[in-house]
Amino acid sequence: MPVFSRIKVTVEPEIYELVPVFMESLSSELAIMANCAEDRDYELMREMLHSSKGAALTFGFTVYAAELEVLHQLTLARAEDEIRIVLIRLRKLLDNCVFIPAS
Image 1 (spheres, rainbow, N blue to C red):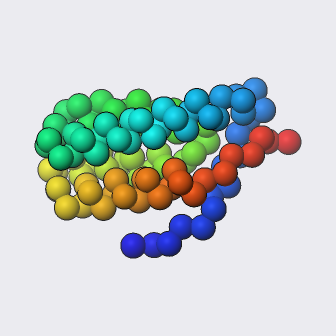
Image 2: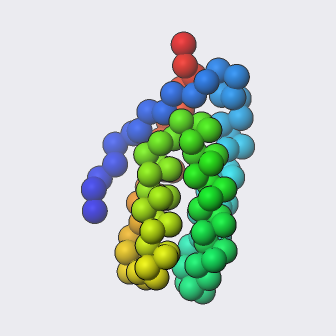
């Protein structure tokens, strides 16, 4: 598994003050997705993925959105082991990102 360095995400100044709420939301949704994976509730997981991906794209967190798309494909395939790996990568991305306002 790759080691993540700090990921810098540039955010539009108009929404920069919402970054803490955004991060809290992504973290909560990721926890729910992890529970869904344990319960094999892939339908609910895909709903959460859709919401999280839209938010990530709104805030310019494209690397996170790309991982969510990978996770979506894995839920369709019901690839349990790979799903767990991507959930870990998503957590690492959340833990290692820094948001900076665009100039």
